[in-house]
Image (tube, rainbow, N blue to C red; front, side, top):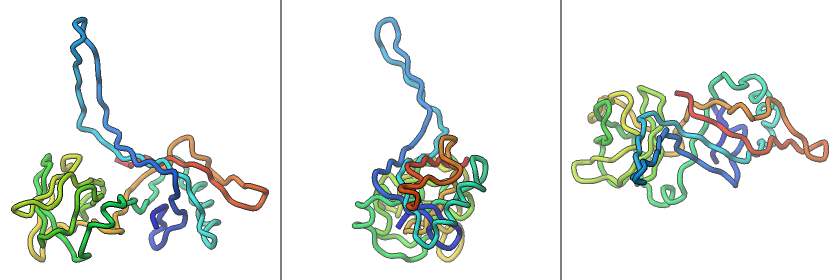
Length: 201
């Protein structure tokens, strides 16, 4: 169950339809000879657009969250993992990672088929969320996107812990078109409709 996290539980569950989008500025122009020039920036953030269902006992909490956080405060989100990842991943053991700033590869310890391609991950020394672009390969390396914003130092029993199961918390903000309140259907049912969240960088 993925959604808005209040530090101990989900107070608003993500429901279909849902879009998880990678926003990375790309500039495209065509020359007079119709050759295409493309320039991609390194900046990147995750954006989630989703319908949301207030949990029955937490509907009031979600309403207060929408009002008090507004567009400026950090909203913690339990990042939704791909269904293919849920079927393939194994383990649950604590994993530590190492990789240099700017690298698109990390090395994980312990090794094994714990982290399949397409897994959202986060490191305990900075809040950026990444996605794995490969399965675990020779040498226990895993490709990631985007490139590491901050170096992570790992090793057996020491270094940077990597979260990769259903515990990846993304720091986001409500987008400016999200209602700072609550809509009601038939005067009773709370329905905030579709909301958009953008990663806080």
